[in-house]
Amino acid sequence: MSSRTILGIDPGISRMGYAILEVTRGSLKLKKFGVIETSKGLDLGDRLHRIYRQVRSLISSFHPDTVALETLAFSRNVTTALAVGEASGVVRLAAAESNIPVKEFSPLEVKQSITGYGRADKRQVQRMIQAIFSLKHLPSPDDAADAIAIAVCGSRSQFTQPHGKPRVAARGGTTSGVPPVVAQRPRLESRGAGFT
Image 1 (cartoon, rainbow, N blue to C red):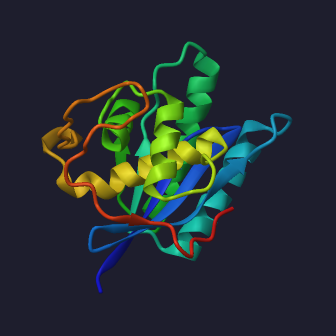
Image 2 (cartoon, one colour; image 1 turned 30 degrees about the horizontal axis):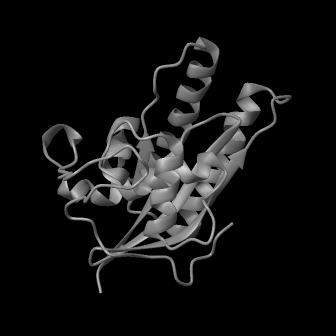
């Protein structure tokens, strides 16, 4: 049975969300998710080194075929934006050392892929992730929930059009928290997943 593994990353310097998905014949299994945290009291270089080591550890443990990385959204805080950009670079380095391709997705693409609506709020995305994987509670913290959504978006990239835009058919789309019908959604499961 052919399967592939995706490491989803929500880049950050204080907290970086991650999620491991296993894709088998269009079925998704959530293996693990959590956050990599660094202390504000540490030097930036030490924080980046910690992120690098943790991402390398995830790669060594789960052997992902692809890293799905969210692109940096607009930030008014230039210092934060630069630090998050550097954290994304560390993830890219860790992936490159293992010859793992990195696919980038904008926040709009991730939301569109999960809910069928590119302007969905965080709560709507979390509810959809909870429903997709039959989780008892909303996935948390937010960074980990975002990483799950990014990994799911990455799993669907085989159904993308040129320029990385997901082929999503939304019928009767709504912003009320009830997701529209999304075309080509694979079967999803979370049984036996090792959550952190």
